[in-house]
Length: 224
Image: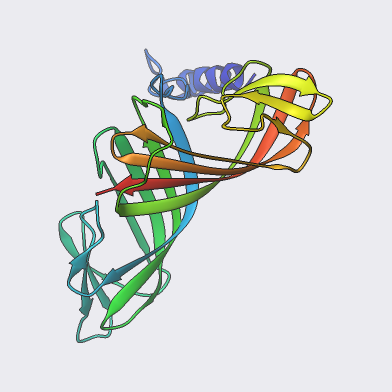
């Protein structure tokens, strides 16, 4: 319906101003590549004076003579005040695209604090359950909610929902006890990329024979 109205509006504009072809493409979203996980997390980032935010090109230089925060953003020296935007997008490690959308929360001569959101895309995932996380370059905790059909995997894991049983929701691929009742916890640790470690802290919101709803947090650790 939206696309139809968009085409109709474009046709009316063409009849008024004259045009042989549509100047604007149809508003189709670019699909994500297959085998990609996406998370959006609230974030608070602190950069010490003279330091670079790990994995990025954002640098805090300290306060200038006008009591402004001096940063290097996109290669330029950028004076900042509280509530000003500081955005960055890039690839801190292979197969990870990170977009930071933040604002200055506070600063002094020693450090600057940014608050906002981090959008993380992990491509070409390879799931390796278990293991030990390495030293973190960047770390984010994203809220997640998943509604899974029977025989569907929990994203980023090899855990499958197999249906309802008298003991509760039944999962294949969990270590130990495979059942969870409503509001019971489900935790998972594993690697989804050579430099990305995933921790899930979930609870069973509801379940039936054909569906389970899980909610909680995904901790994404981008390693050095």
